[in-house]
Length: 294
Image 1 (spheres, rainbow, N blue to C red):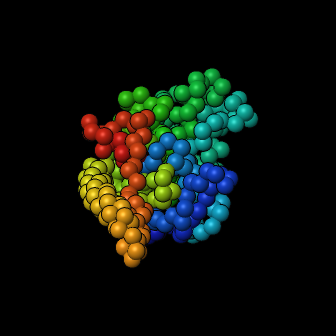
Image 2: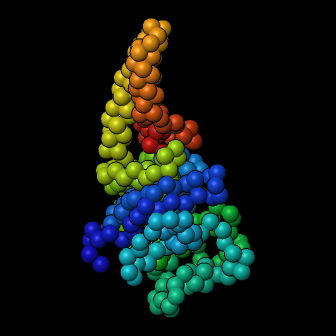
Image 3: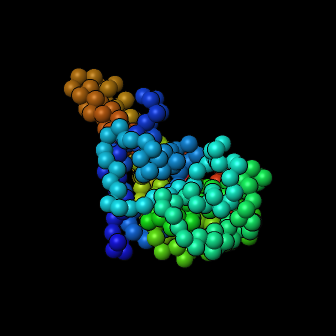
């Protein structure tokens, strides 16, 4: 598989949960082989839904999700099935593969080190705590070494050492990775690009660069939007004042007043909605802009 080849492409994809909960509206973006992507958006915007569309768990209402031929995708499940509670760690990892993997023990040890969970391969899954089981689920995705690795909040159940191990793993990972996370420091350590899901427009904006690069790009864009809104606000006031003035003159001046009102309405429609902050995010930098990125 050639480096830089497009593995995933959303082509005018729309999706909603019923008529009143739109998630995506004619979304377009592409993910290439070897890229490390952060998927950002406010809580509830639909980031996990994008993962489900990639894995074909969900189907778009319109548009197409293109996945390149023979591409393998792995994602960490959120819950362990009941029928896996009484198997051993060895058996758990054996079930991650469709075919028998010989000499799997060193691979298990390596991946357990990544999630900072060094345990016996004979230990039964039921004996683990909830947090430890979450680490096993994360490890079950990592050990598959897929072409595309999807990680949803992978640091939630990791301590500082575990996060450091996972960060090092992702930095060295030679394949494609898309991560949802609220940990800005973790993201900035390996991010090469950002997909931002805007919960107001239901569009995905694609940026190139690490976290800091994206902060700068969005900062410039927000500044331009604010300047545009300020200019439009000035025009709206001027046109409304002119409309009131000409309306009082009567006669043909009423047509001029009507045009002034139309211009004011057009300016109102052109104003850019201000993006709200997601206060659940811990920003990388001590500014509101850091929060705006999610």
